[in-house]
Length: 425
Ligand SMILES: *Cc1c(COP(=O)(O)O)cnc(C)c1O
Image (cartoon, rainbow, N blue to C red; front, side, top):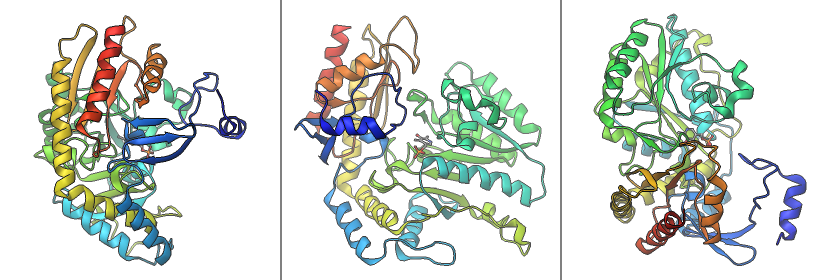
């Protein structure tokens, strides 16, 4: 039964990624705690997707709330050109401490898409400032890097971007490593970088999120990075989803030997509490901007760059993340997820049950094939929501991407619901 808030919402609000003529109701949430979202009508919904992959320490975390409240009384915001503050410097120091060793400078923005825009602009202007003519970019098929124009350009040219295709810049795409195309993949990559025109190579390390939780081995990416770095191509790791423990290590790049030049971070950065984006780069990249010629400046910035509240929250979130408690939870979840993936591996209705760190995913076998627009999607979503579990399938791909405070029995409850669904199909 629609309540008052739903009706008011429908009058005035436009929701993201939401077909307007489907009558899946938007649920009013009154409050949230830990892994639960509490609706106006008193339901407790288990948030098994970390509210779009952002939440890591549970909702309304006391330690994080305390950090916001303290910071809000001290310094809520200040222009970040010509000024600085403790939370931003501390966060930059903290990030560089845990990022791979070549990372040296931190540039702040507001979200994952802007972190990617900044990375691309840094890479393009790096070559511009050096007087080189490198203007090409390589990206992986199936990639998702955000919804702004640069981010869409390097993302997969799928149905979502059809209306914008004439406005996107050209990108050389690389087939997704499927375990069988290794030779062709490397040959194509080599051929592209050998032109000497490639400015940057951008990728989601080890797993493509929105592309359907598609996983690929670290060894393949390592080889690509080796080839790219040898050819002087700037390697951009989009760790917006994979960062901050998601894949079992702090960063997915921690599984690699060859390290990227630029990192994009957001989502888990603030524990899912405040919007904040970060782009980090090596000393060498920043050096191309340090020049008496003022036109070599990086003329980019957002009104809310390095917002002190967001930075303070990120500092608190990182402290929690690095605690033994959180690290052992991540290991426990990763183990439990891998067991569930194993258990479903020969299920007749399941294809490609897989896990990476705290992420578990499976494709439901359908005649239509795997796709975001698979007609089963809404049925699956509703099936779980009726059981007070929030799972948001990507088409016929189901995945669990929980906050790290989820308990063993809560994961088991999700597994049982999935098995019940599979029995019913
Ligand atoms: C979500 C996501 C983005 C975009 O981040 P927003 O904060 O939603 O703009 C970029 N890259 C990856 C890999 C993501 O998962």
